[in-house]
Length: 149
Image (cartoon, rainbow, N blue to C red; front, side, top):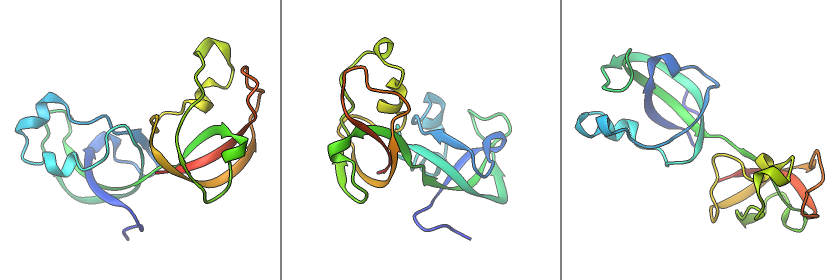
C-alpha cells in the first residue's frame, strides 16, 4: 500500500530494502543514455529518503547497478538537527541556517550541520526533541529538533 506523500522511484536491487535511508546525489554520467532516467531521477538532489515499500514487480537493466534496478516507494526522512532555542517551536517554519563554526571546535558539529538539509532550505519543525547532548562551543542556546522539508 502506497504511503501518503511517498514517491515511486527506481533503486539498485541490492539497495532495495524497507527502512534503508539514503541521500540522493543526482544522476551519474551513465544515466544520460538510459530510457528509465526520468523514473530514477525524480527525487531532489541532496535530500535524505527512506524506503517504505519495495515493489517486487519487474527489474530493469541498469548501467550503474550490476543487478539492475527495481521500483520502490520512498518518503523524505526527517532530519535531526540542533537549532537556536528561540526558533525551536513545534510546527514553526524555519529557514535552515547552521551556526558558522569549524568542525574541530565542537563535539556537536554534525548535529548542527546534518546531512540532507542545506543552508537556506525551508523546513518545518515537526518535533522538539530536547537539549543538545553537549554545550555549544560558541555559547549558543540550542535545542535538538526534527525537521521536514
